[in-house]
Image (cartoon, rainbow, N blue to C red; front, side, top):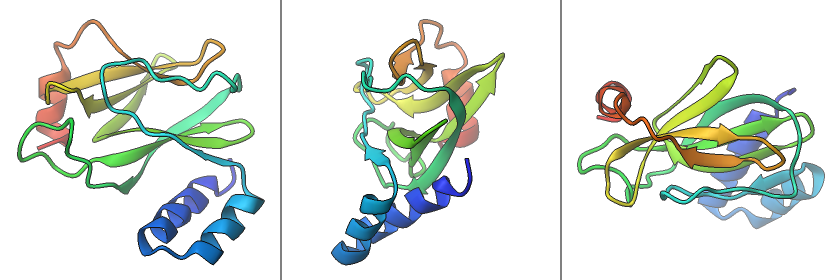
Length: 143
């Protein structure tokens, strides 16, 4: 995985400060794809079918559109694959359980929601059916 997560954070900071020359240089030299979603729809990148090495929280993004009122700031979520890293989603927490990655984010009804990482030929997040733990996790990480 090297230090690709540091590169992603650097790109996000450069975007924040509108440093176009450095941003273009990083994008030209590193395979970094940017996509963000935080609604109830499944989100995929159909061009990717690589092994997931890790999932991590990136820099805070200040996104509030799908968060309950008075939530903590959400962070970008980075999915580290064997040959690239993609930014996909936003939330307060990521974790792995029995080889499956999850993240806690919000939904369009502004409620805490648990999503599962989908990797079967596509990479993206899908809302899980059992949301019983979402409020407890939100109380720990999102408030």
